[in-house]
Image 1: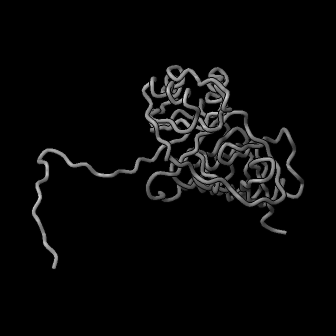
Image 2: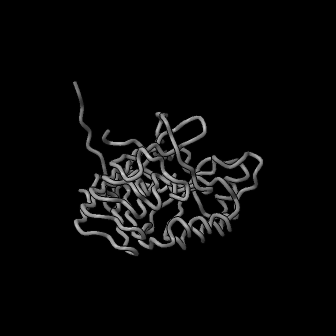
Length: 255
């Protein structure tokens, strides 16, 4: 026999569990000058990329004997780039104490998105500083569709969604998406997919002739010529993990 007992609830508040989508910055160096330069290079020309996104600083990539960064200066740098650092994870006891003293809270259970796990023929290179690595927040939005050519100097950012471009992306133009990028025409500018760390994002183009391609911060420029089997052809680009780290794989879509 069950018994129901009436209880009293506070009249002015309730305490509930909540999930907060966080951007995760995996800190690989305590050189804040180098970090500032890399952040400016990666995001300086995309002023709307971050929108006061809450952020957790992941200290786990730092060497165990490395001193902690200047957290006050780090927080100021991140806020300058419209990020809201709230918490940290990982690191040594000394690093954790410094982070706490700067006002960050410990978040040891914060998780970042998984990376790609399959390895095939791969080409590419990675930038020297760590990109942000958040999962996309909430339900995926419908794809952003662009049906006009993009000229040099134009930039399109599909925040939290895929991007579909039905016309040419000319040299000097940029297409950026948090999800996949589909270009049903020649891709001659820059294409940045998985811009906020989604390693499962892909780039599809009917004619791959880019100045730069990037997925989740791993990039390649055409200063190193693309293989002839994909240059100017219908191609998909994806990110995989191998013995030497994550790399870009380019695969023709037709024979």
